[in-house]
Image (cartoon, rainbow, N blue to C red; front, side, top):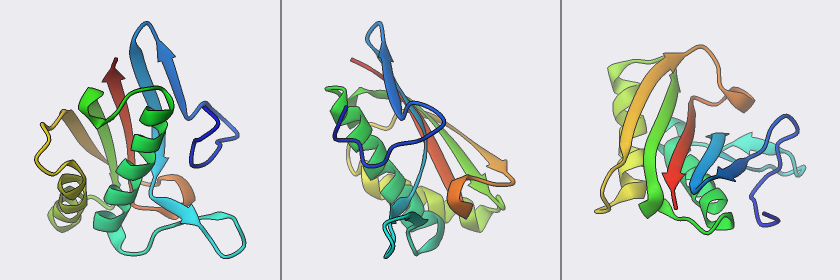
Amino acid sequence: LGNLPMKMPFCSAVITEGGTVYVSGAVGAVRGSEGKPEIVQGGPEAEALKTMEIIEACLRACGAGPEHVTMVHAYLVDYSMERFQAMNKGYLQYWGSRPLPARICTGTNHVGLGGSVELDVIAQL
């Protein structure tokens, strides 16, 4: 698991147990100018796309890929139909023509680094 995009000091970014892969909540972060993570610019659409790219890196580190994802939990700050649609645009851009996993989306007050989208996934090997 040495190829993960970022280490988290408070939990495992990804673990496997009995053929199931659990990817912890991730936000659409990039390395900032000082080397510290910061949220990608562009709002919920850009954040959802970048978050799924980070999640894919976690999956690949465990020998899995997007095709193995069975469930996604989505958390959206300041939930509104406009922000929900923006998040979905980036999310669907990531998935393209691949089959979509099951998903739940809920509103929340805050996600890491002050972003607006946090996603976690469960996958089956």
